[in-house]
Image (cartoon, rainbow, N blue to C red; front, top):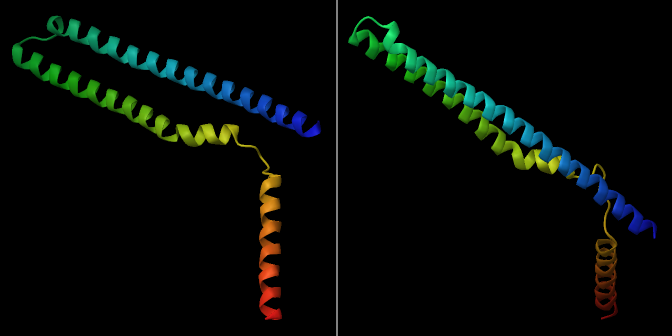
Length: 129
């Protein structure tokens, strides 16, 4: 019964860690999406105001190119953040649910003992011959 209790305890602990990890991921994603939405809104407002603020068409064209370039760099930075997070996601998840100490299973121990006995029998048979 203690083994079953230990397994239940490990499952409960890992389940809580998985839920906590998922909540942290959702929170990060929501904050990142809000930042991207804010940058998109700022870009749109700047585009709307630009025709009123410039004096001639060449200035307008230059300002549009600068705005688009800056917006592209901002989106690139956000994309790099997403890629970095997704790249580290499997490792972070694995670390969140791995137990701190590893215990060998009974089957592994049994197999090791069986292999030693077989090897001992073969050497005994060779010595007898």
